Amino acid sequence: MTDSVLNVVLGLVASAISAGLGWLAQVLRRRRRVERVRAFFGLPDGGECLIVVPRSIGTGSHAHTVTRRDAYALMWLAGLVEECGARPELVAHDAAHRGLGTKTELCLGGPVSNKRMAAHLAWGLPGVLITSGPGPGSNVLVVGEHDYTAGPDRAHTLLARIATPDGGRPVFLVSGQTGTANQAGVRYLTTRHRELARTYGPDGTFALVLRVVNPEAYGPDVVEVAADVTAAALRRPDAHSDARSGAA
Image 1 (cartoon, helix red, strand yellow):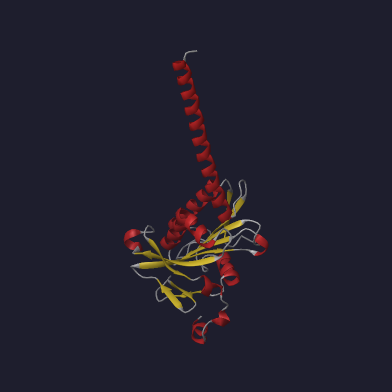
Image 2 (cartoon, rainbow, N blue to C red):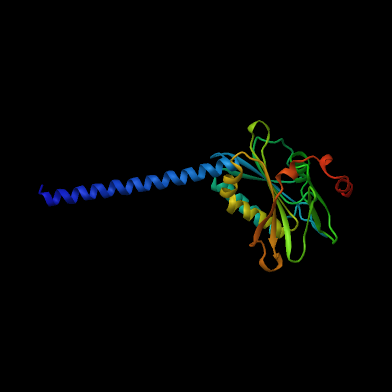
């Protein structure tokens, strides 16, 4: 074999090794990213996730109907679960009679349309109150001393992750003031989960109020963090002011 042929062969071998190492590095990076997502959501490969479905609120709504906006949000949640290699299980809010920690739970909707949400708020985020608003079908999100009301130019969503006892699987809550707000909260969770994991850790509890900007014009696409309300949400109601407790 001549020197020129040997150099060509060695060059091809080196290129093949370099390409193989590059491919392996990409695979390892993707695997690490997926493992971090799985850790944050508590979704091991082949695991199961409970997605709790709210009912539609309104005149003529059947007990088991879901709004179009909530249906879109549920599809995004199911896609996130499947991306982690886990299996989503959709359960109606009044049929999720099971404990906490055995499966990751993604719970969607307000406490009026979702009994499971009402139970989670009372158990895990006792400082959160959702009261009737000034208009029909509206509500006010109250956390500590702050009220968050919906209007033509804004709506709000409570996005929370609650760590369960004994290192069990977490519970995620997306409770919006409107169907658009529910959809916006789910979109924020599915697109910003890496940022949330860096900020709060893979095992942390947090509660955020998200502001949906001008939902009538922009739908669920323009969302900003209105406040990190973790401390106030975890505080028991007896720690509120007398005036706030009376209003609740």
